[in-house]
Structure formats: C-alpha cells, structure tokens
Amino acid sequence: MAFEALGKTKEAAKDYARASQINPQSVAALNNRGTARMEERKYEAALADFSKAIKLKPDFAPAYNNRGMVQATLGKMDAAVADYSKALQLNGNNASFYLNRGLAYASLDKMMRRSQTIPQPSNSNPIMPRRITLGPWSVWRSQIKKLKLKRIWIRQRSFI
Image (tube, rainbow, N blue to C red):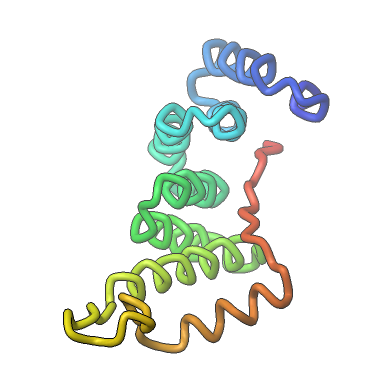
C-alpha cells in the first residue's frame, strides 16, 4: 500500500500479485490487487480478482463493494446494485456501501429515463427539442449542477 500512496500502482499491483503467489488463499492480496488494477484501468483483470476473492471468502463485503465499482465503471448498473446490496447484506454499517449503491441507483435511474423519450413529430415546430425527457430527472439534474456535485465511488482496501 506504500507504493499506492506514492502513486506507483504498477509496483503495488506487482507486490499484490507476488503476495497472491505466496499465499493463493489471501483474500486481502486479491482485493488489493484488484483495487490497484482498477486504478490502472484494467477493469476486466480487477473484476477477476474481486470475483476470485469472493469465491474464496463469500462473506467478504469489501470485495463485493469493489466488484460493484468495476461493474458500475463498465456500465453494468444492475450488476453493480446487486454487488452493493450483497455488501450491505454482509455489513450494513458501512456508509460507503450505501453511498455507492445510491450512486448506482441514480445512474440506473438516469439510464432508464434516457430510454423513456418522446420523439418529435415530423410536422412539429423546429424550435422545439427533438426529444423530451420524461419525469423529474431533469429537475434533479439541475439541482445537482447547482451544487456542483461529482460522482465519487468509494473503494475499500483490505487490512486483514
């Protein structure tokens, strides 16, 4: 983790990989290697690490949370919500799990609202927009822009 603090995620990933070779049952090494791979934008490799950690220790909530972050990054919001929900089922006292699931729900809601649009009739006024978004999402979005909030995913490191 010292390498990661210095911004050397490649070196950190190598050390986590070595730790996994020494102890293939180390859930912490797999989870940490997955987080390092996420930072390197190697999402499929990170997904594999988190899935392997979950297979080794099905009650390890941080791996579900981290896998959910990868799923969300890849645009698989249903899978992300499922992973966050499982993390919360295992550890309902972690605020970051709630935050991440809330962000995934909001993204999923946004995706669903984008698909619910009304096409403009061909004989309508050309000044009108071609698509009109249904629902209160546009109101909420304007409030978020006013507050200048950014989506922040909170990852979990392992200290076992």
